[in-house]
Length: 160
Image (cartoon, rainbow, N blue to C red; front, side):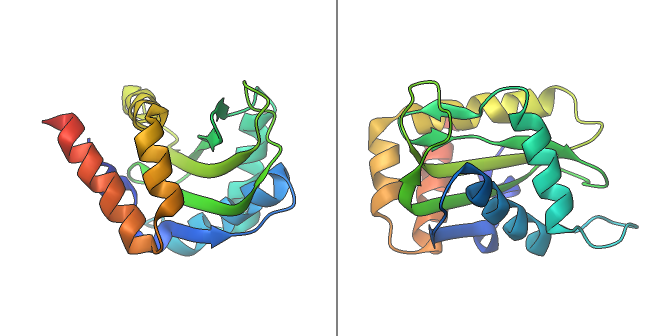
């Protein structure tokens, strides 16, 4: 289970702005719609992804604390796990468990029929972003390529 298999460089926004939680989720949704293909189905729409994220958020905030959120949803037609990473220029209120605003969003998307892979991916991302050093590296990275390299490198160390 390699983060690099889920997260393409083109699905990373190293500088994004949002006025609040809904706008941050909309940014994630637009990136997902541009980057995810669904074999045999029409192109994914940002509104479809946004609706899935909002539906999941209605069950409870995915703001896990320390400025991090891990929004996630299942999407019809995906053939594998996919991810989007967004770093916001300024943190936004996200109803996080620690009531702190969020500036790092690592969104996960699973096929509708995904079983335990989805849960293992959520656990892996949560463990990865629990590290203060990792969060600092991600906040200081200047490019999407740098963020991708940081996430891949740490994932390789963790897997070893």
